[in-house]
Image (cartoon, rainbow, N blue to C red; front, side, top):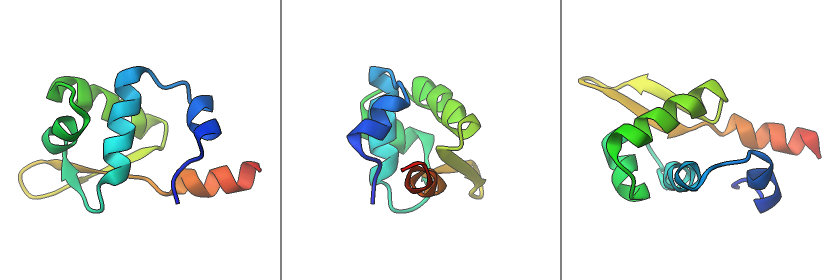
Length: 85
């Protein structure tokens, strides 16, 4: 289950944030920021900046994956959405 359009709208994402969010949501496993950036069609540095913002907002999580950090969508946000209904 993903967030509803109303919930996404309530998060007030910019265009690039929305692209990164959608790419992150499509990833089934941990992915490096470079791959998420390619999927979203934004520069890697922009994706990293947005991913760090998402981490602060508990939308994304990062984990050390050997040589670099890898990111994933944090499903807890969906649980919180159910709680808010």
